[in-house]
Length: 393
Image (cartoon, rainbow, N blue to C red):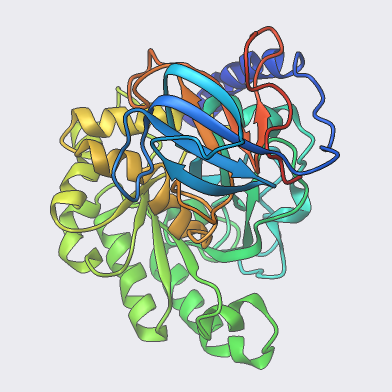
């Protein structure tokens, strides 16, 4: 592991430590005796899909959104946040949150039997505190040190033990992260050749993750940073007709025409000290017609870095609408759960974030978050919204 990555993990751990100190003060949320219909009223509601409302009301019951409008339905309990903004819960397109140092297995560079969910700890303080950064859903993934690293899972934060999607993709790495001097592959040329051979032989076990990926049942989530890595990954996706999502894509702008029409890509995390071309990359991809999602790779960066990544991308050319979509609906599409989360729509899960102001202004704080209708907030904060509100868990 490089010194820069170790430093980043330490910085992320400091950020998580602050959240952990807060989460210890939460009140326990007991299951409601009967479903409650609760209307959450705020100065602004930004649904991501659909028109914003000012003021706006989101009504939830039994863990689901049952109404979105300008007025609360008659007879509902009201939680009032008169100066706040409500947005969908943020979705992190790639994370190791809850198990930072146990998601790589260096014995075999090609092993699709491994499942990231087997290393996930939903009770960890880092996972339980993530809603305080607005992050309510993550794609929990293996590390990048293997060519075929294993199977990702899409999970809720806040302590839920039930995955949204137990198998949301097969993680592949095309780049130097997966090469080793004393373990094949030792070069990217060898990596691509060995991966191609493994894919050709994957049909021998129809129940394997690789076989299901080849049948299009689950996508390939491919780490590819440089333009040459991205092109190699696209060539493999075309050859094997894969549903592929490309991660990091630091030089995606150089091959944007190749990426267009292939669905969202995941960029990030971004920090202010990165080269200008990486900071401009999301905006350039947007301009080229490529949908962009963002990821934190927590704990390399803390969950709160999703918002800072979106803000940095905006400052370097990305539109405000695309930046907000990148931490909500586009990430939900990569996670394979856009029908459940990523926007404020009737029938979707009641995963919401209430902020004191503009969601893309880092001076705005998370007042409270709702995960499946259960509110998560520091106990020290008085007022409406603590405990269960139309909860479904």
